[in-house]
Length: 375
Image (cartoon, rainbow, N blue to C red; front, side, top):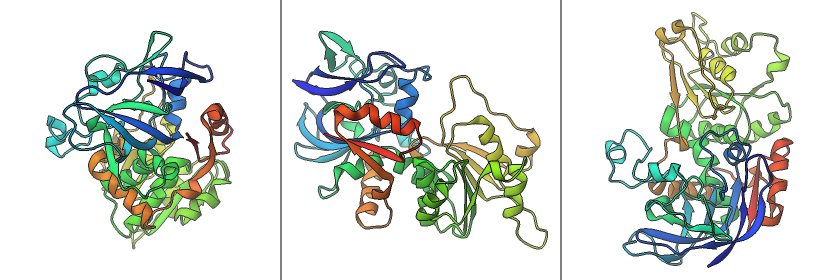
């Protein structure tokens, strides 16, 4: 069949809108009509050429929502007509990682997913007879896409596609980092570095967890209003507090008779390795945890004095907020529909597929929290 897609022909170049060929689903695969897709910083990271694992030409996109229109042999968990969210982190429930219950990083299709192909080693996409790579196993910048059955989460049918597509990455990553990775307790003092789409969802997660103090850190003062809208209690602009941001944050979080400061939990949503160090060192000695969410450039390394870790601080990383896609994503959709979390205010721009490059421009200019393409 033919489908409209935004194709990344080469790194560093705008996406090209084209009609591409899409082969139907094979065994254990599903064909999904994508109704809406978000434009995420990870897509930009790959498109820019900074991603060492980026493959071209490819159909990017990993934050979508749509309807199952066909299924291949052996598919049992979804059927035609089901509403789904594609999962770049699948959940097979059978591999050693899934069975361990210690991680959400399913390994069932990891090797082929990284190679830009389906589990059988081939691509379903082509343009003028030439192979196009899949991206993160999802390729939601196409109106139709084929995915492994284990990489779709079935959701309720009354959820709006142009909002819940954001749960396919940004919402789940931010909220999940709080609830699954950090397991923040009520009354905690927390600091969030970077108040973009991920950071705002971390703040939402902290509000859900009952954090007492939620400090947002960003160099853009316009983010103060955004943070407060989702539950932030204090705002710090590093450019306005002098040379020692860490000392300022430690001072803000002092408690008890001994007046020892430091946050119970900190979250880096910037991908900046200098900020990652600041986030760790702003956490409380003895028990502070710092969660790394942001993706750093290729080859970047993090560093701190060993003393920071010897005295009890913990560095943690998280992917997809520690969420198990097929299990947790439907619950988060329910939270949205029940009013427990907000998404609508963060969808700052919507556009048709031909305008998708405008969405990337808005991201570069810092004018959007999330742009969504509606098919």
